[in-house]
Length: 551
Image (cartoon, rainbow, N blue to C red; front, side, top):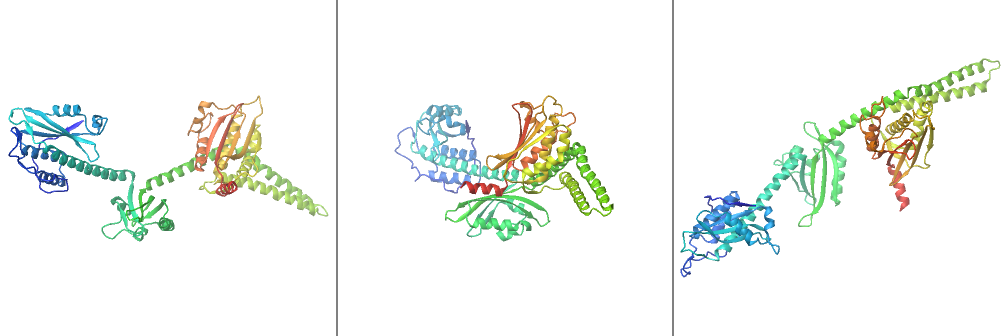
């Protein structure tokens, strides 16, 4: 609740602007008997000494102790003490204002009385805004009955000096704490700050930002040209574009770029700045720069790991589809052999059946192209390559997956129904990854119906427009269904309800959909089975066209 000021012996003699009283209190030779007189330094001199102590950077307790010693030396027969209040002392304020309750002040002051002294007078020490800073307590020696009164004008003047000293030093300490906190926060978050006056080109950097760019601020002034020497050559165009945007007066700037340092190492930076106006109305940007190199490397490693996991899931699906793939390839190959034999016989007769041979040749080409398409789809689905985003028709992607998996689904006695929305907006995404998700949902639905014999095994795939410029794809089955309380666990990595499952299919599928800014979920059907669905944004062109139509 309070801090008592210990006594010390420091002195100084320079004024730093503490407001003194107007004049030294004169010695009152005609003072009433029993009234102590002012025999020491004047208030102005005391204020100057206190200012000197503050300028030396001495602790507040030392400054206030010296202040009390100066008062005690000037007022014989009395002893003073300053009690500082911490923020919890707010409860001691009067309800009608900021002054401390008299009973509360007497309780604190009486408890702080030294042996041989009794409480004589006390007053609150207030800030310029009226908030309580402390208590000034004056004690009289019990063994000095001849001294009964203290000059009344001394205490307000002394309290004025004490309040100014406390408020000044507490403000300085708060600034130091804030500066230290800012520096430590910048270190922990790898963040640096800067300011840029657009009209003059003046740039002020923090020490941490100079270290980040590996520049010596004491050598040459920091300029946009100097900064440009550190920008990665591939990001220079973006950097200059942001500079031009800032000069045009945009409210906020946010972008990422790379640094190429002298040792050829690369750093990734994120820049955020906000527009303000200085006292002269000139445009200025106050901003922060964060080193996100570690985050970018982590994201790249995570993306690579997700790609490997997705490929593992595709390879797992390949094993399931082996029989269907063999059937898909075998049918056109058998057709090629049959057509080739037919063509040879037609050419061997006399006269040769040229027209019939041409027709069988066309059928041979058709079957060869069919086999080639099967192989092409397989290679696209299971090859190891990076993600490629493009504008694609989700309905077309579904048809390709159905064609690839139809034999497997029919072998499991699954009837496929498609309800594909006409004029469905195109989406922007990776065809292979989205087809992997659709294929996984198909195979899961087929597995869920493998033990169903009392009703048709029906798989319904449906596309439709969703709200807010999005499209939705849903796969509904009539299988064993899912428990409502276990829906969320279905998407956890390595969680599976299949005896031989790996538990990565749905986890990878959700990761793929979320990377496309979409959402994947599952719900139990009102009847038998469950429905898995995902929703994702339309491509930018379709979203813009819809916006224009709504204007």
